Image (tube, rainbow, N blue to C red; front, side, top):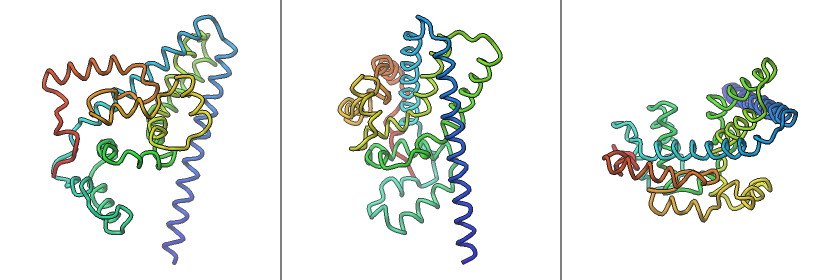
Length: 249
């Protein structure tokens, strides 16, 4: 009974920490948005579009690398990947905990990308923190806070804020946007951004799942022609072998 209460307290602390980090991140983004409005100039629009484009390209490059990076050998992750029973069963959950404990956090992300292909809808069921937490902590929050400090300390031009802000937002929420492509019901902002062609549609993303050899970018898809050229060039040189798409024993 006491251990259950202790576990519950730990979970409450973890949830509180996650909410605090997200609150700081959103507050920092809002501050940068205000700074942008105060320094708005004619270069803001092209800078906004360039930042959004590069965030999309970053999502594609990361996606391509993670899809084809081999999982660590000898960890028997294939037992999870090809598991035939119910993934809600206690047997599977115990196996999952055991296998995940044997690899580091980065390799868990690598496995997640591969596991997503045969089970795409699972990504849409994940909560916000699991989708964006690591990206926010490792990159998006530090960059946003640095921009806050830079604007307060120096005369940062409006176009630079306009470039960095969409790049940070697009990078931080890339996996959330990806998950929305595998979810039937989405918030109104996602629906609106799709109508404005700022986010791609599930039909466009399906082209990636049909072959796993094209259209890796998952934000708006604007950069997919360039990423596809890079993918084909790397394949011609013997990189990105299909054996990396699934875990081995």
